[in-house]
Length: 253
Image (cartoon, rainbow, N blue to C red; front, top):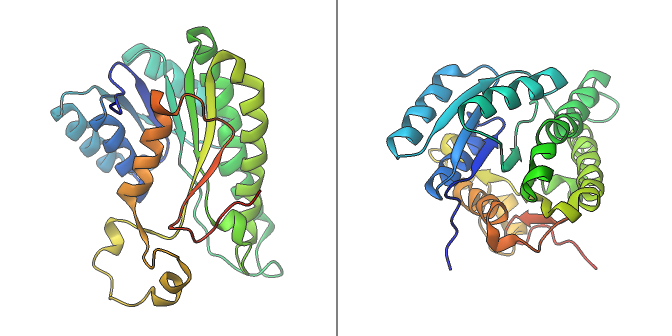
């Protein structure tokens, strides 16, 4: 039994970000050709493209604002002309902002989270799922968060956007399931990424004490879950919200 994505094409939005780049590398390591989306960091996108191509896979970079429908359409056309139809979509990009209380948070921050969590996925679905329907199969994966279950103070805009995303993915899973397209979410906890590996030890002690596994997850562990959901090994899993948080949040029945 192998996790084999040979012959598949995957799009990762926000692929130059801390988690996005690890997801892109992991999918490529599993055999997929990769479309690397970025918004500003062209240097990192080109670096990732060279890295993936050096590993024997094809890669193309696509740039644009994922909160605009025309960006999704332009990405679809660019990818199809270079790599063919997209079999795997990973909606990873999200707008960053400063977390504040509800009374202090600006309305624009709520709008940005809705646009980058919900509308990004709507636009990606409209652009890429028609090909998956024709192909009678595909994988549509969103990066959610443990915050959607925590609802802690100052998380309101982020949590609102991600909970809206959750509802969208559950409905979409029911609408496209008959075409053997799966729609799932990976929900990371507070993840260790490249920028965190040189942080002062102990700064996350309060958080890790609340985690049953008593540690933070690694970016590679999140990417492994994405790769599993992208593969044929997950062919009968759809509509799922899967925390990869060391047990810090546990959906109940």
